Image (cartoon, rainbow, N blue to C red; front, side, top):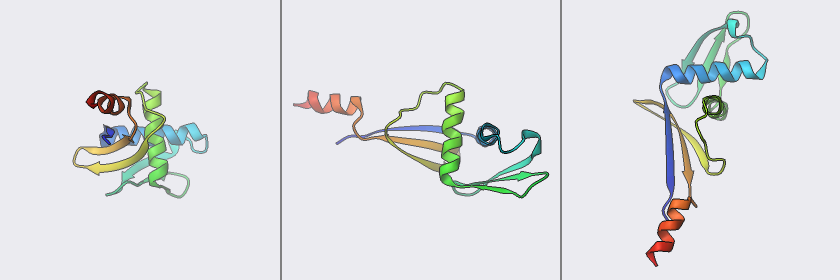
Length: 112
């Protein structure tokens, strides 16, 4: 059965903004305390602070930050679907796979 895949790609600047937005929304860290955000080779990140230890962000935390960033900028995201992250030469991508997408269902019903 066909699947639909949405891929929303964030450059490094947007990814850093998403991470800082996520940190500030949690209320646990002050924005003026963030000194650096380092993106790993894969799908992780490290946030450095001036007054506390570094914070390692897992793939799930990074995915949550990117989804919150999309919501803040009114980028529509499907609620259903399998979400994952992919890093390539263009940046970090939020990939959403919809197995039962309406378009795929419509194609299947028109084929018969």
